[in-house]
Picture (cartoon, rainbow, N blue to C red):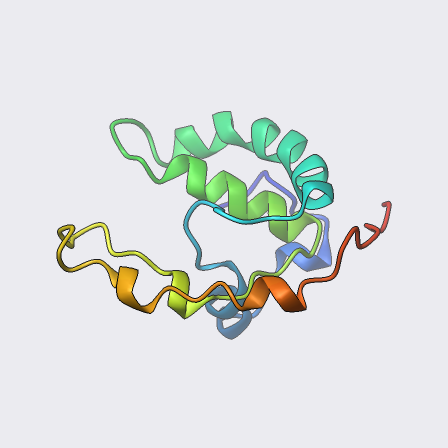
Amino acid sequence: WKGFCDDRESCKPTDRDAWKYYSVGPPYIMHKNDWAKVCPKWVEYSPLALEFEPQPSILAEMYSYVIACAYYDLKHQYLFSMLSDPGSSGSMENVDNLNFGFIANAQKDVPINDE
């Protein structure tokens, strides 16, 4: 896709890094500073993403989100204990293995870098 953040090096990840850091769905947990930084670009990129992935697809918002994250070089870390499977039923969900231990290790109020 062209026309999003073509001039930024962070928007040109290798295939390996794209899968590792940006192959994500909607964010469930994100620091408030990251939300404040990413949301304006996410909103900006959403209309163009809909041109590439028109409705009734539900993927355009996910794509515009991860492109906005790439714009700021905001990489994601999978928490496999927190993954859900939209194809599963309530009895198949990963609820028995949810682990919130990562919260104890989270940094509080980490400053964000301005552009």
